[in-house]
Length: 357
Ligand SMILES: *Cc1c(COP(=O)(O)O)cnc(C)c1O
Image (cartoon, rainbow, N blue to C red; front, side, top):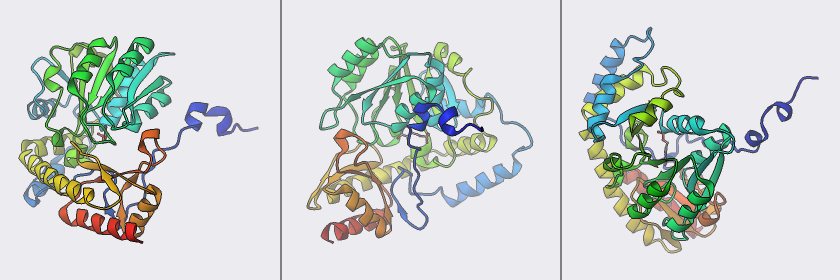
């Protein structure tokens, strides 16, 4: 008898729900925190020429030294700290978890937060412990500190700003958790471009702290480049978990060239932040909607019958994300990415129509 998936696949994997990416063809796509703007024509033309020249018959540069040097400057990484690159920060999360996942090892996180923390921990065979945020999505340090005491996590993830709630947790509370943690603490700063706050400069005084960034939310989601910054002693071990050539030649070339002109990305982030302010004000004035302040490029909001609202928007050609049912604190919550002015208007019109229908 041939074996079935039930015989062979681990039960914790069978119990997972696959990370679902909905079809968004021809939709106003405001579901995935992408930057709505493309790169300027001149820069795209330069990228085309660089791609034309690339030696794709060869394996990528395994050390990616030129790209790392530029990243150090662009991300203001403190001198003496190392960088580790990933195929998106998702891959860095995977390397981190794989490196610590001995039987019984605990990965700690606040909840609700980025789903990949729990999902990758589960896949790697570590034990994920989630501690709930307060009802207003602020970080409650005391239960987290109690969980640190009780579970002695090997790895703690804190998204700063948090996804899907969009807020920055209290920095002093995070510092207490870093201080109290016996294991690594990774601050995931995927939304740094929109946040105006960072733990990067605290790397020097905190030997168990690592900072994670990504180019995805900044405008290069299609490229897949994540960056982990921290002390060499940690990154040298994590580097052994990295698959050789995980960051392809095209990613290296394109990222380096775009980062040489990163004022383009900074300007786009500034435009997104302006639109975020407008969208928050307009959303806040829609009857029946409660919108939460955001330090990211998306806004979490609550509207009764969130599933119906999600479907109504989808039927009108606007794709956002429903979080209803994903966590106790997220009942009737939806998340919209800040798009262009026109996209945001299309969203607001569709939302008003849906709520009136
Ligand atoms: C989107 C996101 C990521 C994943 O980014 P990639 O670099 O595209 O893999 C990581 N962390 C958080 C909190 C995110 O929201």
